Image 1 (cartoon, rainbow, N blue to C red):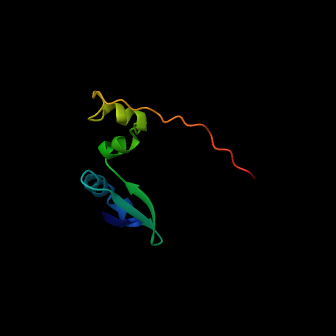
Image 2 (cartoon, rainbow, N blue to C red; image 1 turned 90 degrees about the vertical axis):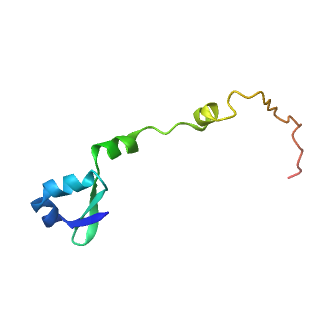
Image 3 (cartoon, helix red, strand yellow; image 1 turned 30 degrees about the vertical axis):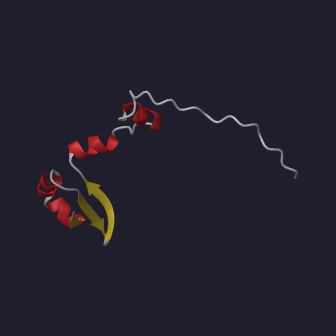
Length: 81
């Protein structure tokens, strides 16, 4: 990742944008990172909703297998408090 001071990023904005197509570009203000410029493709990838655990299991290699999973149903234990 390249790091740009804000003044430098403003002066060479086209270069910052061009370089963001290959890797994120960090912009700093007073020596502190304040922004990251990323490509449109990376932005869309990061914004994709993550699948739920159920969706991952349904797409997994065992999704169409004949494995049967049964829940163990024991009675609750009584505890003296």
